[in-house]
Image 1 (cartoon, one colour):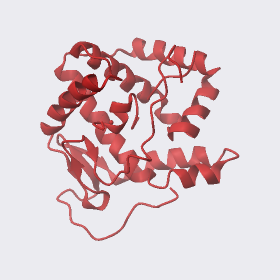
Image 2 (cartoon, helix red, strand yellow):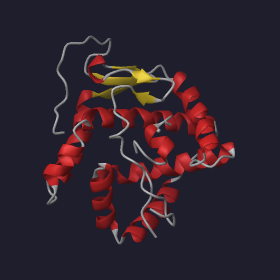
Image 3 (tube, helix red, strand yellow):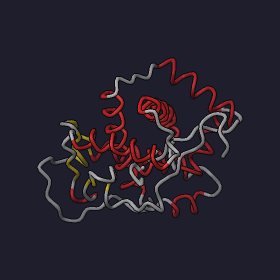
Image 4 (cartoon, helix red, strand yellow):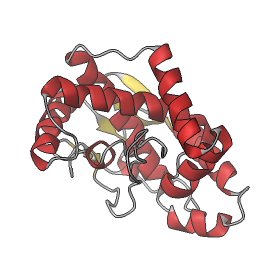
Length: 219
């Protein structure tokens, strides 16, 4: 049994969000924002630059500890923007799930994470795989499992298969609706939020981390 699919992807849709779903430091180029210190504001809640930097550094710190660290860091050169994309998307997914009446309990998450760890050959092995293949840091594993559960349940509530093109289209519309209601405002240093793709416009789809398979699914 192979490990869970996460986020930025959880399914090809959730991670690239509508397509649908660093070595480089945070940009310091000029740009004005009505929310000083915020990387983005989503539904009135700030994602601060400090929060973004802490999340990115968590991944970088883990990457620096593995033998192939230089290659991992090189391959995830847009980690700051991709991480912000994921942080925003997580909130959009949570709103779409809430609008659909979907809830994920702590017990649900624990059981799914345990299954993912067992399928990967242990918790340490799961963290290593997700870090190397999807740039998911050790501190993001539980959130990734939660998001996958929400995405899977959202798909079921809509009566679709996430990997089916028609299902992706229907999921995309639900995410677009949620995104459009949240007043997403991104600091210009990081780009702009694309409401149609549910994606940060400056993130390159070729880099976006793909989703690990869910428990029992083929790689």
